[in-house]
Length: 163
Image (tube, rainbow, N blue to C red):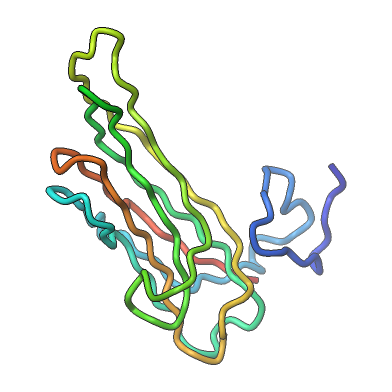
């Protein structure tokens, strides 16, 4: 992979690897906000917000890199246990009123014998967003939808950085 200089642009949804930021000085990164409250959803199968960061108007002018991590406790018995984790961004504090940028599904598959099993599955989202209205306050939201009320999902951290 060719090393990138400090003037590279990134499009929404670009996949980033460990060599992507070669040549960019760490001091150039700025922190736009974080959420480390470790909000958890359990007892519902409805889509529920588990993390949010607000970004002040005019703080960012080009784009942000969102790094979110969490874990889902999934139970599989008669059917697979799943958690759908979604990343939203926009000017509303309500996640589902914003644009969905990324979605991932974590699955705990049923056993051959059909007996119940429980597992904690970690998840990480790394996504670049450049299409928000930077002159307004923006919100980055993480939601979870569980396949069973006995399961849970936690957003452990959201970090927002920009150049």
